[in-house]
Each structure stands twice: as structure tokens, then as C-alpha cells.
Image (cartoon, rainbow, N blue to C red; front, side):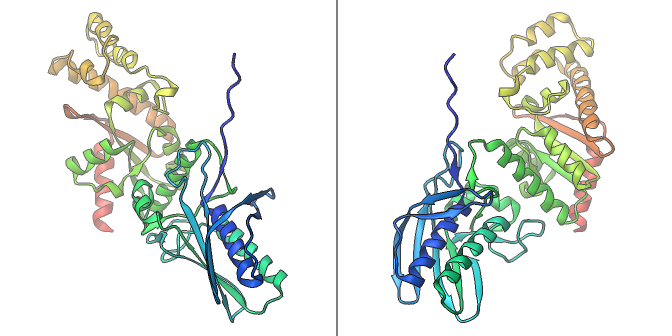
Length: 373
């Protein structure tokens, strides 16, 4: 068997900002333009990066470091992260965001409302590095650092930032300084942030949707704006766990049957890499509903859930959906424990298909909460 290639790591926007800030500060205070600059990461290891695109004035120096994401599917790969550094009369480091770095507009995020979306650890590393350069120079006063990502204005639309309440650009992120070739943790962390934001807004009854189909369904069917729901991707189980840990009272999913049929078998990550089993689950639900075994066998040969649904007449479909939703409810509530949990399922062809026994009440509580806010 061939050895599997280990994914390539990259470095975060936070590390790029830290390196650019160090290079610009060194140039401002000593006059030296470093071809390469080494910075210490939060974990203690060091990384050497190359500053580019220099601009120098008597009282200000700017340069940029190009982002490299490794094998992580990151929209920021290849963008330039700029740092502009100038001197101040007051001691210390003043750090802010410029063009393309988002501004926080909602509570519950890493930074307070009104602040640049430069997260806590990158802030610490940028300021600490700049302090070291300033101290080594022996110069009085302090430094002002402005981090900019010009491409961040257009890239923000491809991120979760607009949904989270970060406007005008992307975030400067990184807890380790390294981008690991594994986007799953980043996705789950984003879901956690979305839940934190909803809870900080005082919402105890949460709504979640795996993707855009679910968000569109909520808007068209219930008039619920997309930004109200948590976009949970395939992470049904993790979303429930995080909602429970947040102290939420209830959580209701709005999901396409093609994804959520898997939950009827206790599958809490609906990505195809963890298994398909849609038609096997459908066949099982048909048998539970007392439908003919021949129909269940036919379902096993279907390619889509819409094709599977077309095998049944209205009365048969209702029995099937009742059995399916009963199992979905069982596994959702089993995972959620004391927190109330339910689901509404739909298909693109048929629209609303049905809901678990408590889903309507959960939607009403969530909608009432929105009106009251």
C-alpha cells in the first residue's frame, strides 16, 4: 500500500500580520529592510516569512506578507496581509484594523462590538512582537500598527463573517499560528461562534440548518431570515452538543430529507464520507410503517430521496414520513438530553414533508423570541 501523503501546513492571517508588523517596525526604527523575518508562534516554535510590497515614508513604514494556507481549503490563500507602522508619543502599542479587516457589530464574538476583528491571540502576538522590537531599538514612545487585507472586502462574502456580525472584511485569526490541513475543526469552531452570538443576543431557542437549502426553506416557509439560523453543515451531533453546553432551551433543525434521513439511523455527521445509507434507512422506515416489502426493496435501488418518495402514494408517504420522523426525533432527543430538540424536513420537489412532534412548538418559541427582541 502506498504511503499516504501528509497534508501541508500553512500559516494563519494572524501570523502574516505578526511578521509584517515586525518587519515594518524594524524598518521604521532602524532603517533596515529585512528580506526575511522570523517570528515566534503562540506554541513557542518559530517561523520565517518574507515581507514584500514595501512602502516607506519618514514617519511610516508598510509591508505585506503573502498568506499560504497549505492544504487547507481557505479562501484567504494567496492574499497579502499588510501592516503599516508609525511612531506615537505615548508608550505602548496601538493596534487596529484597516481596509479589508472586518469590524465586530454583534456581541458574543472574540472581540467587543466596534473593535477590529483581530482575534485575541493574534492581537497578543502582534503586540508582543512589536514591543520586543521597540525595546531593542531603545527608542522612546510607542507604535501604532494598522493591519489591512485589501482583498478582504470581497473575500468576506465567501466566509461566515456577514452571518456572524463582522462587517467590511475578514478576520485576522489563529490560535496556533499554523493552518493545519484540516478544515473540519475550523467549521465546527465557526458553528460554536454562531451559537455563542445567538446566545449573547439573548436567544434561548435556536434554529439550525445544514446549508443554503435549509436557510432558503426557513425564509420562504416561515419568513425567518438566514442570519437568524445557525448554519451547521454536516455536524448535527456537534451542533446539538454545543447548543446544550451553551445553556440553550431548545434547538430545531430545518433540513433537506437527503441529509436528515441519515439521522433516523442515529448518524450524526451527514457527510457522505462517513457513509450514505439513505436508501437503507428509507427501506427500514417503509417496513416500520407497514408498507410492502417489495416497495422497500425498490427503494434500495433509488438514486435520490425524491425518486424514493415517488414510489409512494400520498397515504403511503404519510405513513412512511411518520415512521421516519419518529426515529429522527428519537435520536435527536437522545443526543440532546434535557434540551428540547426537533426537526422539520423538506425536499426541493415537494417542499415541506413533515416535522417531528415538538418541532412546531420549538419554531413558535424561536419566532416569538425574535419578535420580542
